[in-house]
Image 1 (cartoon, rainbow, N blue to C red):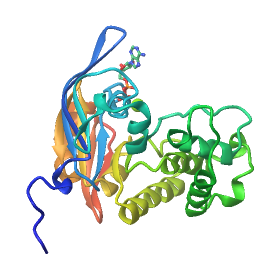
Image 2: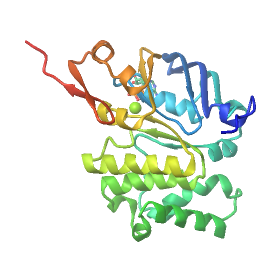
Image 3: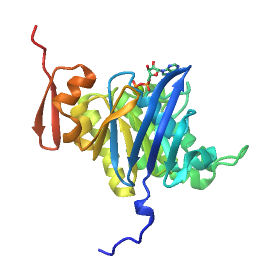
Image 4: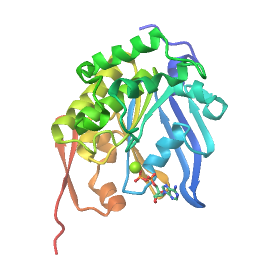
Length: 269
Ligand code: ADP
Ligand code: MG
C-alpha cells in the first residue's frame, strides 16, 4: 500500500471536538468534552438518561450554541454557513418532528434543501437524488404515503432517507433504533453499516441498547457527568465496572460473537 503523505485528508478526523462546553437554560450540561471520530469510523456515545448524549450530537450538528472547538473534516464548524454545514453533516434527531399530512417523497425532498436556491424549486437532479435514495432504502412503493401512516420501522427508514438525500458524509444518529422491535433494530443498523461501507460514511450515534451498540460501533464513548468518562473499543467500554459505576446498574458482561453482551441481572436483596 502506498503510504499517505503527511497531512493528507485521511488523517484529518471527520469530527474533532475539543473542550466542548454546553449550558442549557443556565445549567451546564457538557463540561469539557473531547472526542475525535476518524473518517469512515462508527462511534457510538452511550451514557445514562440525561447524560447529554443528544446535546453532544446537536452541538456537533451545529444545532445549538456551544463553546470549545468543533471541527468537521478539518474545518471549524463555526466558520461554516448553514448550507455548507448541511452538505457535510446530516442529523437524524431522537424524535424528528413530522409535519402533518406530509408524504414520504416530500419529506425526503426536505433533505435537498441545502441545494435548492432560496425561493427556488428543486431541480430534476434533486428529485433524481431523492428517488435514488428511496430505491436504495426500499421505500419507492411508499413514496406517496403520508408519513403518519407508516410503521415505526418504515418511518425510521424514511428519517434515514432524508439524511442520506442531504448528501452529507457524516451521519449523526440519535437513538436510531429505540422505537423499533428487535428485527427492525437490526435491519436499520445493518443498513447504516452497509451504506457506511459502500459510501465511506462516518457515523456518530447514540444508543441505549448496549449490546446492540457494541456490535456495530468501532469505538464507544461513555458520557457521564458532562464529560467522556471512557472511550475505546466496545470491550474496553462495556465493562461491569464502568457500567455499574456510571449507570448504577447490576449487569453481567459476557463475550459475544461481535462484541460483549450486556445482561441486566437483578441485584441481590
Ligand atoms: P441524553 O440524550 O443523554 O438523555 P440530553 O442531552 O437530552 O441527554 O439532556 C441532557 C440534560 O440537559 C438533561 O438533564 C436535560 O434535562 C437537560 N436539558 C435538555 N434540554 C434542555 C433545555 N432546553 N433546557 C434545560 N435543560 C435541558
Ligand atoms: Mg437523548
